Image (cartoon, rainbow, N blue to C red):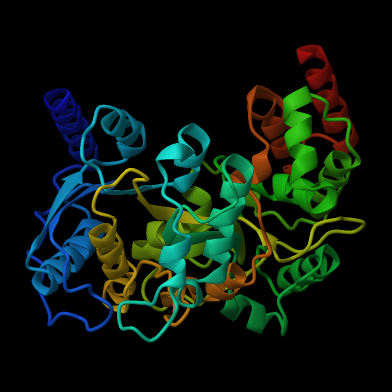
Length: 438
């Protein structure tokens, strides 16, 4: 089985490297003096960590440096890292069931919660312990919104306890150009749909194109409007039953129809193919774009270091049930194998991964740290308070997916936003498609 898994991993890594092109070889980590703290003097043995990163990626360099610091402070412990790539989520369960030693692993925690939560250790005692420097309880050091995200997943698929430690977080929100807002005399970011309407009007009057998007993200604003109006649970029920006869669906279409009639969507939206819309935002040709944290990295070369990034959460909507603190956040997460035979060493390595030195390395690479004490990169700084304030996490796309969403809802929303179809006609088509699907 070991040979089979090793060959599988090698194939996955080779494919991933081919897709990414000729990436530079990873640099040798510089080992600083070991951080003081709670290291048990008796740690020994080995820890096997299966990582979701390829060894050529910057995240791998960051984590290798943390491993090196850990090994220097704990000379009787050996750490073996399998740079498994994104397919780690499909390989870990099989490896554990085959008796392979896997003490620590990471990926999107949703996949583990949904497929095999029994291999995820209860990390309540880890969160109750002190950080690496011995000064702060880990549950207080890590962003509360991330901890709550993990507990929410656990409530849905397991026992409601903490089973992962999220890191490298992201947030979905409105990116906006602060200079455009200032030039248009806008002094406050919108918190309601009516305020967003007023902001768009001021931007348009000042000569700016208020909102831009492209074919990859046309329906995002619509889906989160429905979530703000009807709630994500209602959306899940619609998708499950194919019954889209819901007032939130019509209200969202009407709202976008109204914005289209006022010329709030950039003219280029008619022809934009991803990533044309976000590149237009990066060139400061439009004022707002609704997307996730990673857009800043994707736009980095075009936007440059001095781009005036601002962020605000999706506004609340008229007659809606959703709050402004209900937003989509996520990230990757570390998980300890529930059956590890070296829990203490695995915990201590994990303490290094979420320690300040390692999280500062994420920040230095333009990536987001998971500690509340650290700022986020300038391009995403406005997202940190949104993540910290989250009271309920909304799944990507507000859980509106599936065949009807892809084939009927998304095209209908695009047609409404481009002024090519009325909200009433689009709504009727969506409801009919759902009924026909049964």
